Image 1 (cartoon, one colour):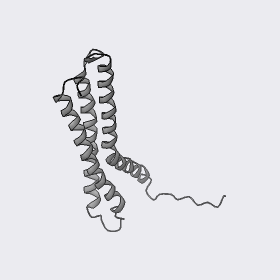
Image 2 (tube, rainbow, N blue to C red):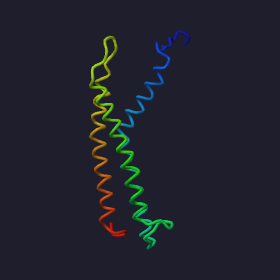
Image 3 (tube, rainbow, N blue to C red):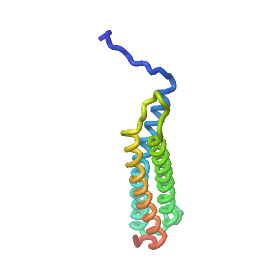
Length: 140
């Protein structure tokens, strides 16, 4: 048990930077999808609860505006995730200086998948927003 060798990174700041890079890559892939899930649950819940009670407002706030916030905030998160995935995709496809490993394989593929997932999630959230603008409250 005492013979276990520990690996020590050559650059002490590398672990924090790689952890941040890993978290950003996860956000690049899952950010838009999770934002869409929050949008779907929040907008549907607010609409259902207010209309079931027979109201066109939610705690004195117009229902259309509340659902609009449930569209705008997740839309902004999905847009940010799209930007992060685009930057990650662009940076991983570019060449790296000599002597350094090229982190293209998995990170590049994950960033590419994130691009399409975030575009899809952003389109769904935007169409949910159109639904809010076109249909009257309690008719959706």
